Image (cartoon, rainbow, N blue to C red; front, side, top):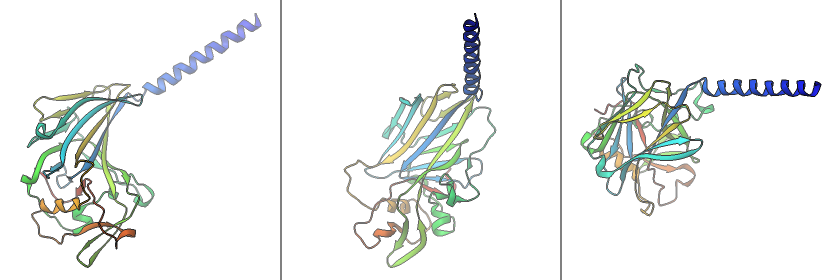
Length: 269
């Protein structure tokens, strides 16, 4: 009888523990949406009400937009758009009935936190300290973000500096890759419009979403200064500072930097 009582108590404890754990798992009622950016595009923060990503129209680069569901570490592509599917489109990303505006994550000390958005290269603030203005006809397509927190996903292993002719820019550090994320709570959905049909990503307690926004050349493309394409988008005439890895500054060819850049002052309509 004593053994039976002990067994019953043990089972009760196990059940109670499972209930507590299940409450902990479901209590947040949230699922995550993450945006990744790679390739030639400019993310403009001049408008406080929205953030706009302008994807450059560059020869040999293919704009792509891929949306995945992520469940228990497994990814499933649920939508994929490429090239002509996106040409001259203006997409809008929002959460219906959500009053929040897009933000940037700033930590107390960016040197101790590589998620701080300031690791991402801001062409206007980091290189030229002025608004540069943009030729919007140079964009293949555009994406307006009404929501989301922008962060740094990772930083380069090497430090970069910028040179033009014999002039060396004082900028000298690692460069971050931008990303953004948001949390869907129960009853929320993420809405993507502008693609011919609306895409709705609903809240699910056991799902997350990954959205990859890329504009990359083929892998076999020769090493060139991809960064130079950014100057073709600027209305303002500035010195064409080009990135080079600090420890390889005297070597040729230069490494290309084909990543998303930030414009802290300009607006993309």
